[in-house]
Structures are given as C-alpha cells and as structure tokens.
Length: 294
Image 1 (spheres, helix red, strand yellow):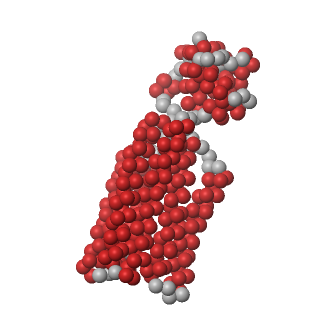
Image 2 (cartoon, one colour):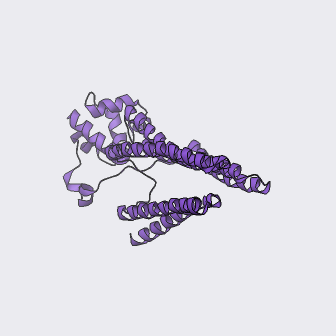
C-alpha cells in the first residue's frame, strides 16, 4: 500500500507542477519527508492526509488506495497529459529582464550620441553591438533558466542544463561580438576583421549546436515548459524558424556581396538589424494567425 501511495503521490505532484520542496512548504514539513513518502520508505501521518487531499483535489480514500476512483474518471482525465507550466517570474528575474532590455536600448542610445559627436562608425557601432550582445545574453539566460526552475529536476541535471544555457547564450553573445569586432578592426583593414569574425563564429556555432543538442535531451526528459503560447503549433513554430533562418542567410549573403563586390562594408552591416526586425515581424504575424486558427 505504501509503495502504491508513493507512486500516486508522485503522479499527483507532477500533474500539479509542484516540486518536492514546494509541496513540503505547503504542508509545513521537510522535502525529505516527501521524498520518503514517494519512495515508500515512510507513510504520512493521519493528520497530513486531509491537507494532501485538498491540495490535489482527491479524496482521502483515493490517497489510501493509491488511485483515483474509476467511477469519477472521465475520458478527458484518462487521456489528457498535464504538461508543466512556467512559474511566475521572480522579482530578481523581472529586474534582470528589465536591465537587459535597458542595455539594448542603451546601445541604441550610445550610437545616436556617438554619431552626433562624429565618432567614427568603427568605434560607435561596436559599442552599440556590445551592449546589445550583453542584453541578449542575459535575456536568454533568464528565460531559459526559468524552464529548468519550473520542473522538479535532479541537482546534477540542473547543473548540466544550466551549462547548456550558458553555451547557447554565450554562442549568441559571441556572434554579435564577432560582428562588432569585425567592424572595429575595419579601420586596420577588412582582412583582419574577417579573420576575427570567422574565427569567433566557428566557436560560437559549436557552442550553440552542442548546447542546443544537449538542451533538447533535457527537454525530452523533463518536458521543459517554455514561454511560447500554448496555441503556437509545432507546424507554425517550424515555419517561423525556417523563414527567419532564410532571412538571416539572405542578410549575411547581402552583407558579403556589398562588401566584396562594392566594398560597402559600411553601411552594409545594417542588413543584420533589418533582418532581426523582419524576423520579429514574421514571428508576431505567425503567432497571431496561428492563435486565431486555434
């Protein structure tokens, strides 16, 4: 009975999206006690059964039996898979997101001020891109970290998943910094800038691919929640990724065409922020269309 109870408790807790620590806080006990209940090492005191039944909306009899009464199980209950959802953003995460957006805006503000002061573009643009890179890095870090915090993940897996996040966010950071370095070195000749750009790009792509593959493993293992709308279908998401990928490939091709053929490395770099804006527009349109269909 104890083992059946533990398995049922584990299932109820997962359906509710609660960690062992959160359930323990609600009952005023330690998370080790919850762990022992679920593994069958111990059984809760009688006084804990009623609070447990209230938390999970089941009867005490169902708890003791270790299963829901068949008479009240509906077709929806039997077939619906309850997926974990993102936990609300903490004050620290909200502050970090706000500061990240402020960094991006500060980069735009810097390039305006530096341009007004007639600072050379190979100085002004890298300053702007570095601010953007930092802001994007922390936004990715905060949002992806929310996913692994929203599930009951083992400590060792948490550390490994966080390393994946650092690799993905770091890869994006390096790509933007590579563009900044290329523009900054343009004052000494575009050959040096291109060498630095592709060298950093190779490292960045490796980090993003390796981190992305490892992240996908954790995603499948724990069914990590994301910030995407529940109505945003897999088909629409893949279409969005394909279109945005094509846009950025065209932007890169245009940049090199302008540079190598017409030697317009500046202002050719503007194709990248334009590409980013187009991707954002495509994402917004597809999500809107997909949600109306749902």
